Image (cartoon, rainbow, N blue to C red; front, side, top):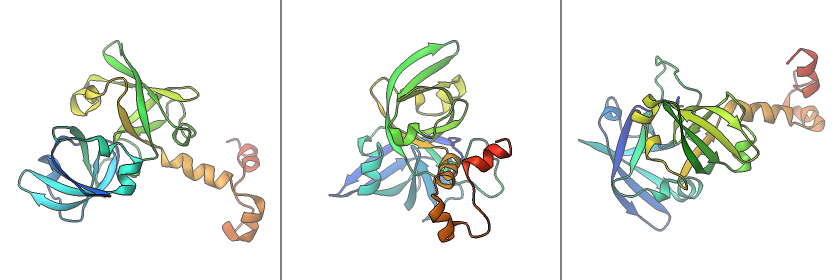
Length: 221
């Protein structure tokens, strides 16, 4: 599990490509501290396994499923990437729950100045938009951000100078593709509310009548 608080911006120093896979070599320093083979590091919001440790970086494999469902395939040597180690049990939870499993790939529609911040409008697919709410959380390339506005197929976020200086957001311009992960809490709520009565009777929730929209409304939710 990750929090969406980027620890370091690394650089792609090499890419080896196969027919259905890619090995990324990533130059980094901070995320190497305490990292061992087999550990997880989020690279632009995608959870990857460390397969080789180097003196100034690490290697990770991305299989075809990951490449097909994320924007990692567009990385090139020299590309900057957001890096975050998996959250330690005694760590601070500064962002929100981020699984490192991309829900969809969005596209930057516009970037405009908003006082000292930059306001990004992101086009997103329906499987992401359905979980977004104003003032809720979303991970863009692994960065935990607050949703400022939600439209039918786009949403806005505002990036403060600190976020711009410590992530790759400043690199993003109109037309760029970005990895998106919605807040996992919304997915669980949808799953619970979407269970049909016959599914609950079949044993999805044998301890009681189950969670329903009527139940939530009855108790003021």
